[in-house]
Structure formats: C-alpha cells, structure tokens
Length: 378
Image (cartoon, rainbow, N blue to C red; front, top):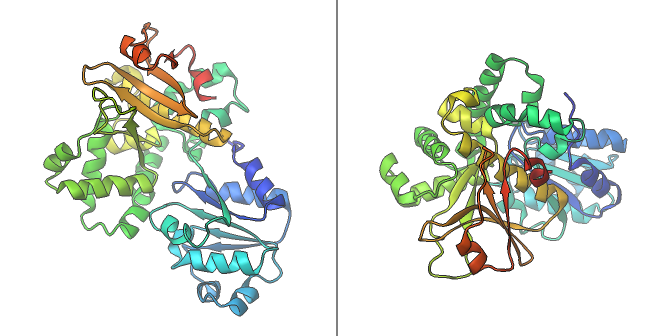
C-alpha cells in the first residue's frame, strides 16, 4: 500500500531551491529511506547514495575530512544522500566540509537516532541544514486516500497495531504480530544499545514495560528506580535515551508558576501504539482490553503532534493538573493562545473544569471523542 508522505513536498522543495542541506530524523522502519528515494526519483538527477550501515571504499574518503578526497567522492553527482548517518564517526564535520566546499551539491541526511547524530551535527551544521522529523503514518497522510468513514472504521487497527508503514501491507493478525515482535526486538533497541552504552538490556525492556502500563499517568522516576532496582539517575538516563531513540516522548505539566499546579512529574507516551502493545504482549481486540482509554489518549496526543509538526505549526504540548485533582489530558500553547482538551473514547459528555476556566479565562476547552476526533488530528 503506497501512502504519500506529508514531508515529500517539503523535501522536494528544499532539494530543488534550497541552499541548505536536509536532515530527517525518525525511528528505523518508519520510511525515511523510501521518502528520500521517492524525492530523488521525482527530482530525476544523478545521486550518490551512501549508507552508514554499510562500509565501502567511500567511507575512508568521506571521513578523511580532506577536500580533495571528498571532491573525488561526490564529483559528477548533483545530490548526495547519506542514510543512517549516525553510524559515521564525526559525520557533522564531514558534512560541514561538503556543504561549505560544494555549495552546488544538494545534501540530504537521515538518522534513526538523535542519540549520536544530533550531537555530531548540531554545532558544525548550525544554519546549514533544515531539520525534519518523520513519524509513523499519520491520519492526515491516510486521509489523502481514505474517507472519514474508512478512517473511523480502521481506528481499532491503529490503536492495536500502530501505524508503521509495513503494517498497512500485512493482512493477517499473526503476521502483524510477528512483524511488531521482530520490529521491537531487532530494530527498536539497535541504536539505543549501540550508542547508549547500555550493559544490561533487560533493564531497558523492563523499564519500557513499566512505562507502557503507565501511559497517560504521571511517572515517578523514584518509583521506577525502586521497582527496577536501579538508581534514579540511571532510570532518568534510560528514559532520555529512549526518547532520543524515538521510542517514547514526554509531556510536562503546564504552569504559569501557580503553586497549586502540579509540574514535577511528566507523562510518557509512545510514538507508536503497535510498539507499545508488542512490548506488553497485548495485541488483543479492544473489546477484550481494559486499557482502551490509555490507547485513545496516546493515539490522540501523538497524532496531534504529527499534525502540528507536518503543518509547520509552532505549538507546545502539555498536560494540566492541580493538586486538588482537577486536570486536562492535553494543553496546547500556541503563541500564548491556550487550548485545553479532554479525551474520552466513549460518547460521555465532560464539562470543562471550572478551575481551568477560572485560572485561564482566555483559554478554550474541547472534549475530543469518537465523534469529532478527525478534526483534532487532521
């Protein structure tokens, strides 16, 4: 199943008219290579394709950081595409030479982890690249070929199996289950274990399971540390590594420095629910689950983040809670304009917390359920 990616027009525009390089971050198997290859096919120019996972003669030339050798490598090509660039030592310095010395060349780089790549390129390439994040398939991307009815009909599949591109071409539960298990075992931890210097991978798996069960709840690193028999600093480090590997992400509590607002603990969500469900070994239908509310909340949060990112809308996502217990699942701060949201999978009506409207009288509130969710994520 071919699904047009939202970033394709932006990548094409950058390659055609931009004077900067392009960097695309995202998890393995999310479609970064396919996206770039599609852009190169449409561009129709001679391209040099290098893969950081596969060493060859090019490796020595590129990493030498010598102008003459790099010139020999890229001569005759209009575009240089470096896939899985985080594998290349000091890749930022080599890219800086390439971009500065050969401004007529178009350069595009992908990385499945920001663990190593971001630190290698952030300083050398400041002002020299446009950076994007590619997620698993978004509802917005699906809406280009699916009707609202089809999207609604398939919502249970998205909550259970997630939205990795490969999932859409697999037609049986058994094969989908095997794919997700292989994905989590073979790819999910690859960069994390390689670059994070993790000695005990079992602790990472155990931590992920605990986080998966706590989706939508505030997470105490102290309690996690106690459960895992690790130090609090180690747990904090592992969570940071998981976030930089695009497995999970955090939402902080929103506050305008009011004492009654709770902000010390973050909520943690998964970038893809198929991965989350495979980690806990639960790919059962929604009718047989007791975590539908958590799945719905995680789904809406990540789809909203995809929507805003692809649309180029600058907004900061949060949750909101008072020490009295009043709370909102999701808060969006866009240029000082506050919007509060509550998520319900059922049709049950929910009123705006009075404390929210009193504390932030200029804010808005909306209940997102199965009737109006498409407007929220597309």
